[in-house]
Image (cartoon, rainbow, N blue to C red):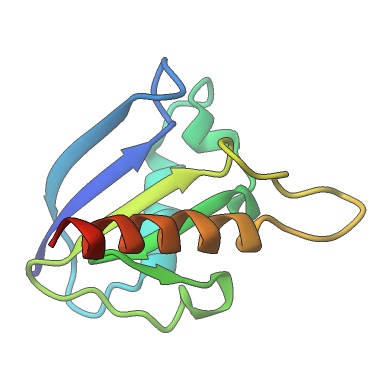
Length: 119
């Protein structure tokens, strides 16, 4: 069974907080399946059980995984999966259409630029 590191940003009692857990997943588990398992095992009062998936950014080993690829991205042993609530610097998902992927991409690119400048 693959062992992964799971980082959840913005799902705890503080919007700026995060949790990191190590867990085993079944061979062949995708990002989408991991997300579904997390949501279904959360208490109804937790944000994790109520949040719209379109308001979450997924990264695997620091690489942004677009929503339509979560069901095709298979997790491997040693992967770090990050789930972040789109709440900082973006518009979030709106019922009228649109999403915050542009804002999420900008955040990821800013982080990459900062890492490159620090090297």
